[in-house]
Each structure stands twice: as C-alpha cells, then as structure tokens.
Amino acid sequence: MPPLITPEEALALGELEDHERILELVERAWAARQDRFGDSTDMCSLVNAKSGGCAEDCGFCAQSRFAEAETPLHAMMSPEQILEHARAAEAAGAHRFCMVTQGQGLSRRDFEKVLEGARLVAEHTNLKRCASVGHMSVDRAKALKDAGIQRVHHNVETAESYYPEVSSTVRYEGRLRTIQAVEEAGLETCVGGILNLGESRAQRVEMAFELSKINPTSVPINLLNPRPGTKFGDRDHMDPWEVVKWIAIFRLVLPEALFRLCGGRVENLGELQPLAVKAGLNGVMMGNFLTTLNATPADDRAMFTDLGLNINRFEDNGSNPRPDNRSGWLDGETSDVVESYLDDASAAAAAGIEITVWDPASQLRYARKDTVPPRPDGAPNRWPGERPDEAAQLSGMPFGH
Image 1 (cartoon, rainbow, N blue to C red):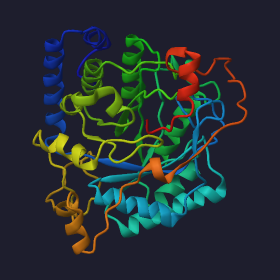
Image 2 (image 1 turned 90 degrees about the vertical axis):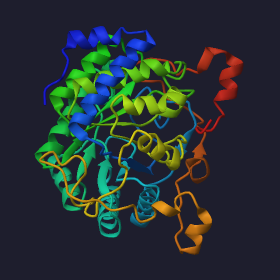
Image 3 (image 1 turned 180 degrees about the vertical axis):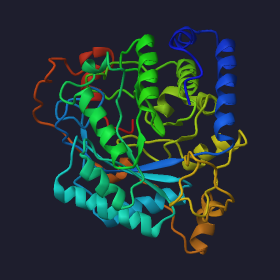
Image 4 (image 1 turned 30 degrees about the vertical axis):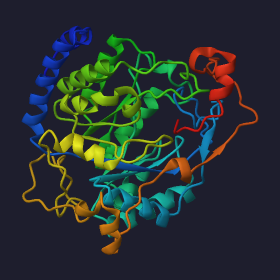
C-alpha cells in the first residue's frame, strides 16, 4: 500500500506544535490504523540472549566497546534459558518473541544455540518467533527459517543521510544487504530505527519514506534513552507530544506496516503512552528491553484494551502469524491460557503456574571498563550536562536508573 501522504505533507505535519492540531493528526492516524488492522494487536517481547562487548561503534549503544558506559555482560544463553524467557513472555501476554544478540554477526557455535532455542520455542510455546542477530547471508537466513524463525529484525537506525553520525563501523549498505538476504530466504522483515539521535525533522521524513521503499512487515520505533558515556549520552529526551506526532506521521507514510514502540517509550512519553497507541501502534515491546527496565505487562495490556483493541491470541498463532498475515485475517480466537492469573500471584500458585518476567536489574551483571579505545569517528563520549561532577556520578549508575 502506498503512503497516504507525500513527503511535502509529512514535512508540513512535522512542523506542527499546537496540541489540538496534533490531536487531529492522531485521529487521522487512528482511522488509518483501524482501516487496515481493525482491533487486532501484535504484542512483542524479547530476550537479550548475548550482551556486552560489541565491536561496533553505534553511538547510542552502551554495549559498544567504544562506549564508556557500564556494560551489561553475559555470554550466549543456552537454548533452555532462551525457552525459559519465551515462556515468561507468553505468560505476560506477548504474541511474539524475539531472540536478540549484540554485534553484527555470531560465531557458528552461538548461531547454533539460537537455532536450537528457536526450535524449542516453536515446540513448547504458541509464540510467533523472531531473531535479531546482526548481518547475515542468505544461507544463515534460510537456516533460521528452517529452525522455526518467521521474521528477522535488522534496523536501518536512521535516515541514510544522517547515518554516518550514528555508526562508522557498520555501513548502511550492509544493513540493506542483510534485509535483502532475509527477504530472499522467504522470511518477513522487521526494520525500523531510533528517533532523537540528532537528526533533523526532514531526516525523520527521509527515514520514513526509505522504510516505505523497503516495505517491511514490521516497523519498530525506538526513542533514544540516552546512556551516560555514549556518543549521544548528553541528549535530552524528546517532548512527549513530539513523539506522538511522529508516530502518527510514520503511520500515514507506512499504512500497511505493523508499528510497535520499543526502547525509550517510558522515559520519553510518560503519561502520553496511551495517546501514542492511538497515533497508530499495533503493539509495544512488552516486559524489559535489552539493557533497561520497562512498564509492567498489565499496564501495557491496558493501554490497548482501553481503546477497545483485542489482545487475545489465536489458537494457531505460532504457525499463522496474526495480524500480519497480509493475505487475510484468521478466523476465531481463544483466550490467553494464563490471562486470569497474570495479576493474581496467589491464584497462579494455586494452579501450579509460575509466572516470571525477566528483570535485567537483577539478572544482568555490569562490567566496568578499565580502558576504552577512541571512537573510530573521533567523537567523544558524553554525559548529561557535561559537568564533571555529574559525569562522575552518572557513570556508575546501573541502566535501570
């Protein structure tokens, strides 16, 4: 489906400041979302299956070896650990589960663990299955598909014209090649980026229309949550109304894509999260993110049900993706197996159901870096306010702060 607005219209909408005008834009985006998707939702959860020590220099990421931020660090999870997190995601009400690793490629041994983890998740849960494991060949993409992966995530991060400010070790063209390999293997694509990296409004429009050309099934939108000691560590959060406006604009540019809001939504949106849902979202990343804490699953579910949206899962949800089967809708629905237990721990215990949600604040260990090589692009790492006393204080903060 082509964009519902032109680049010129998107640029004009990007200049809106008046809240009433933004609310009118939200209603327009809400109508576009309902027209394509009705009341369906697509709630996602992830596991950070391998964390820390990344060799790339992405300016937003605390896992980069070039960042001075403390790094959450753990080796590649076992397939059984991946399954444990998938079961927790299913218990929290997620429709799909993504296995995520740091870096731009995995060793053969670690890749085999992802494949086995995917097989276990396919066998033991009713979740749709995704992977985000860096650059890959067509052969690797086909191996993921054979193991039960249905969609591969690989962001472009920002507009092509701004990309050199984001990373100098991971080329934009390489990202496009990976996306093409995923498509050639017959997998769905999940391609998005991060807002508030210092890009202009015109470059946000540029990214939206670049994504329109790629035509991914799913578009995850992240909002920078500045990590002290990274290249973008001194940036302020976005104004919540600015966030809502851009979600609506992206919805109108990509009317057929599944939109979900991921990293930084709690810190940037606050109480406007429900309005962001109405601006065109199909879902959010539930539970906890790669290195930071998130909202509770109950709060996430309520943002959608309060708008009359359906968060239930289909019986055959794992094998027939919903709502992103572009050829048509599936018939019938069933209640979540554990829905009645999600907010009642005593009832869950009495039924013999143990519900856990991954908490990186307690399950990750943080590695302080003794030496940090200079960034390849020569840019400094930054801290909020750039005051030495504040920098020294914040550099020791865990990522949940």
